[in-house]
Every structure is written in structure tokens, then in C-alpha cells.
Image (tube, rainbow over all chains, first blue to last red; front, side, top):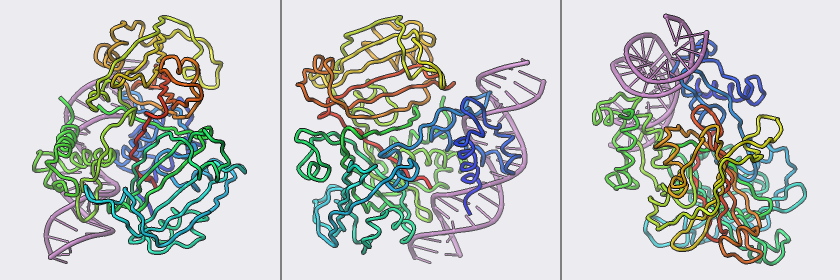
Length: 239
Length: 239
DNA sequence: GAGTGGTCTAGACCACGGT
DNA sequence: CCGTGGTCTAGACCACTCA
């Protein structure tokens, strides 16, 4: 059982996706939503605020909540979504080849260093995977997961979805991530795994993922073929 | 005069930046904020919600609002911020060379096409600029602004800051933008303006900016030297 | 003037953490 | 047990749009 506001959010979002509420039209007014769902106005406003934040609607004072053009998820990432979730939404055939699995191994991962402290080796599970999209290897993912948070990772979880394992089976509450995108020349491992020529470029996404209790527990380096990389974002201006 | 919640947000944000509230410590509890600022709880919660959304704090039930590591703005963009605003925050010496200015000119800009309609030429002001950072030309910005929204743009506004002109002088209410990042080979214009060799790669950020009334009025293509490009993002997991 | 969204309030009940 | 944040409510007042 979710929140009322989350239920309203989901319902409105689905109806926008299914064009029950069409692009360029207005959602029911806030007072109408109160009656439609049997909720108070602030509860409805919370749902509308989320829709606005995620680019579904633009709220216009005196008029209403206008449905605006909404970009669906695109490869590889927007927000914080697992690879498997994305592949399902995109209806893409995808394979997931684990080519290296070490656990436990002590590695000096900068992302896990205490503030201002030394970068000391910490016990992690290190997983390297190649993502094969429509038959073509496009992405290398290197994951480093703290064994102090996740002591053991079954091989099948790595081959399927780490997020599904963390959240579904372990009940971890994944809360937020910081991400950094840069462009770098392909290294020999990139070229070997993805079959690239010398001089090829990669889009590299490095991210640190944290739990609801603010524990940083996963560091990921995701290396994409430059010609297949696309990142889409919706942002609101803050004043 | 801003909102109460915005005032509280700004105050807390500044105190976090100035380490009045240090990393790894907790903000005053919600009830304490009520007394500190003379506000109701929901008003304080709105401010805290914004801080959480922007990566300043992590709210932990039963404990409080924990100050977490917060990435300052980084070049070129995170969220929707003007180039000049960024340069000021980064304390970087920056120049802004307008090398092409055409107004009005009729161009077929896809971003302004009506839904499902033809891409017809529309009257825009077309501005091309080179951003020179610490003495080195790193970025080409190509802006196309609808003349139906902004009839006239003074040259000095292009040389200074378009956002400052739109918002400060025209009173436009810039609300949101969609952005797309890709990697592409440098074209001859890139190589000429930035002094690059053949075979160089560019990070290309294409964005459409809209006003509070949902009018898309500006299309920007921002082309960055690959080796200078960095994009940072903070994202929360949505369930 | 009627309807819309924007903000704020005072209070209620719940779930979780730590003592 | 008490303090924390999470959710929801009913009502108030304001600013804006449009007929």
C-alpha cells in the first residue's frame, strides 16, 4: 500500500502516457482532483509537484496543469534507474555478459574514502560486465560493492540485475546517486571487449550510489561507445 | 520578498555552504526549525525537501536531516544555469566572443516545430559564440531565439549574458529545459573556432528552453572540447 | 466575479531510532 | 518512552486568468 499522493501520481502519469490526458491539454483542476480521488488539496498538489518535477506537466497559475512533451527514458541513464529497468522500458533485446567476478577483493576505491582521509583498500565485490544491445556490445560496466553492506552476491544476480537483488532480495533502500559524465579515449580493455579501433572515444559515467541512511555502498564506472551514447535530462530553473 | 520556505531554504543552504552546519552532522529538527524561523512545520518541510532534492541533505526518519557531500556546480552544466552564472561560481576568468549575429533570419529549427507538424522556417535571432576559459577557446554556443518572443536582442546582451537580458530586462520567466548530450566528431567549424585537429571529438549539448507558460522559445547547441567536458548530476531514486 | 494555482497554518496520526 | 521525520487534512488568504 503506497501513499495516497503516490497513487495519484502513478495514476495521472499512466493516463498521460496512455494519452487519456493528451499533450497540450490540462489535467483536472486541483479542486477536481480532490473530489476525483477523495483527497485533500495539498495531497493532490504533492502529486502534481512530482509530475512537474519530472517533466510531465507545467503548472500555470490561473489556468491549470498543462501536459507537456515528455521524453521517455533513453539509454543509458536519466535519473537513477537500473540497466534492466531501462532495457524493459525501451523494449530492447539485451544481454548481460559477466566477464570478471572477484569477491572479496581489497581495492582502493576513492569513492569510499572517508572525508579528507587516505584512500585505503576496502573489501569489495568487483564485477565487470559487457552490455550487449541488439546483438552488439556497447557498454562496459564495472561495479564495486562494499562487502560490509552486501557480504555476498550470487553470480546469477550479477547476470540478471544487481538492483533487483539489492532491493528485492536484500531489502536495501537505495536513495540517491551522484554521477559524472566525461569523454575519454578508449583503453585496451574497452577496445578488446567492444571490438573498437585505436583512436575510438568513450563516454564514461562514474557514479556513487547511496542508501537511505546515506551509506555510499556502490561505485560504478560505465563505459559507453561514443557513437551509441545519449543522455537526456529535464531540468527546472531554480531562482 | 520571497516565500518563507524559500527564505528558509536559502538560509540553510548558505549555512551548509559556509559549514555552519558541517558535513556529517544534522540540521535542527523540523520542530526546532518551526521555532527558529517562526514557521509551520509543513513550510519548513518544503525547504528541507528542496535541500534533499538538490543533494544537500539526506532525511533519515527517526534521526534527522543529515548534511551530505554536495558537489558544487561544475562546468558546463548541471540543472539549468546560465554560462555567466556558472563562471562566477567557479571563479574562472572567461571571455565571450560573438562571431556571428543574424537577426531576424528564417531558419527551420526542429525544436520549434508544432507537434507532428512540418519543420517550417521560423524567424529567429541566431547567435554564435565562442567561450574562452582561462585564455583557451573551449566551447561553441549556437543560440536560436524566437523573435516572436524576443523581438530584438542588443549585441551587448549577447556579449554579456542572454539569460540576464531575458530575465532581468525583459522579465521573462524561464521555467525549464530539456537537454540531450551526445558525442560527435568535430566539424570544420569546431576545428576552426577551437583550433582542433582532424579526428577530434566533441561533447554536444542540445537543449530547448521554455517559459513558465510552456512556450519553447530558445534552442541551443553547445559544443564542447571533449577533453574539457564534464557533466555532474545528483539524482534520487524514484519508486 | 468565478476559477485556477501558490503559500501557509495548526493539528492529527503514523513509522522509525535510540534510550 | 520520547523525539525524529512521513503523511494527510481542512481551511485560510493571495495572485493570476479569463469571460
